[in-house]
Image (cartoon, rainbow, N blue to C red; front, side, top):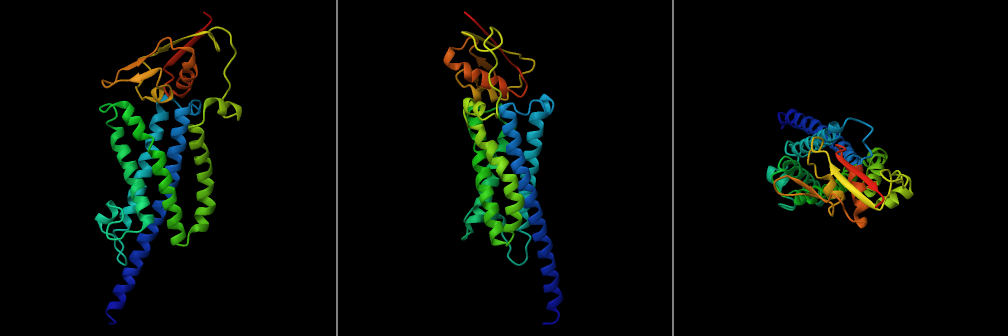
Length: 274
């Protein structure tokens, strides 16, 4: 019996170290996940235009996403190392297997959706682009269920006070930006989150007709324009961009939103009086 005591002590110390690693990686993943979503919204809306170079916008978003997924995977893997309550690889892949906990299932689902988005990101030019854009938007759902997983985990482990102070501080601006992403441009202008349209002089502000052109040297086919103005811009299966060079008046607002959101500033619009 006495010979087992040192073994039990060593096992307890090992589990304690693994739990600290899991805890730290979870907090880093939480912060990076929120930063990834926020930076993605800033890119898509054009609000990040003045903060960094054009190419750096997309690269920064992908770096943050990669780090968030890496720390999230490390957090999940740590649970398979615990001696006291080991979780098999199968349990870490399949939610609810062998009576898994609900909070664990939420974390698994969120991480797996993010992994799927990351894998398909490298293949987005090989699949129909509209489908890719729609799937990419499931990242908002993945972030939401992962946040719920984080809060449930904090409650279960007695760390709610830490998450309440730091997690909520990070979550509020993230949720605000995510909400703003889906608000109409008119609402954003009214609350001051977006500059109002310029004057109505021909070639400067609103006119009776609009000429749209795309600088092919700048355009990287990210598809943001299609997401903002599907009635004006279309990325077709062979990765060619087609667009309406003279859209009707009811599509003017869409075209302006696409111009603002383009991370490469490749869209040029000239409005004129007929």
